[in-house]
Length: 341
Image (cartoon, rainbow, N blue to C red; front, top):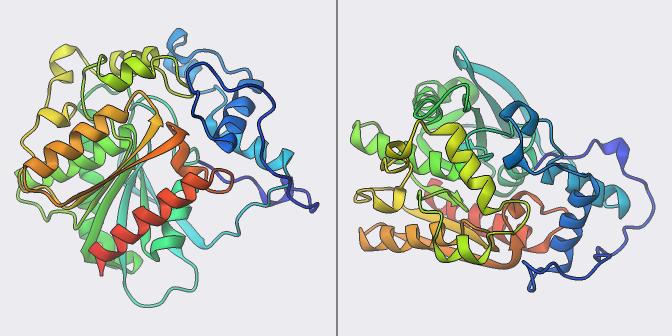
């Protein structure tokens, strides 16, 4: 989630974040702060993504915009920036944004981060607040990857770009004060899928494994009829029709959906790095994350799984407004720090 420009927030006292309306039918357990963000998103009149072209979908208001609106409406100040950023080109079409903790000295561990958006929409700015939260709470350098997206670049392009960016970090970490021996991967949603796929590709191609993988509500399967897809089919900001649209725009066909890099729950997971999986209760992807955690444990991979109640897909970057996001970031950072010591 992106951070609001500092000038947009008033100096008045912050107001408590409380929703205006009744709880939505799809979210009887939704937390008040989360509901307020969802109401703010609705007030921005986004069109249903699944009715649009990819180009139109990329212009729609995002949950990030909704969080900024809640912050403005409730006089919530933007957290002070604790990271310096620079951009580097990995290869034609693929760049990274490197976030370095301010006033850091010596070599630092590195987290390679992959943003969400169903491999089709969103960008580095959309997920800026998630990345800054990880930088601040881990003290690590975070390298956020802008991979190429569908439908212009179909599967396996985003996956191959993500692995190329990981290898680039291993080779170039020292040039931005990173420790090439202490590298983890992380991602949200489609980015959680990419982070796990990168670990799998590293294992299979005998490249150094990440020390840890943080997977936040990852896409881990191609089955649109899991328990959470059924229960949360109409949830916001992500619903079942949108997931079908993402698959359609990125995959070349059903065979791609069954690939182990997409259907992580059916992959060989032996020898994967220690993993933290975070899911949201009101999310079609909750079962994906929960099943992946079970499969990783069964494959002998040390795995920590935490589901957060009352929150939806995309909550992780909303720490300025949603308490569960701050808790999830603390958990994620603690596990990453342990692995990167």
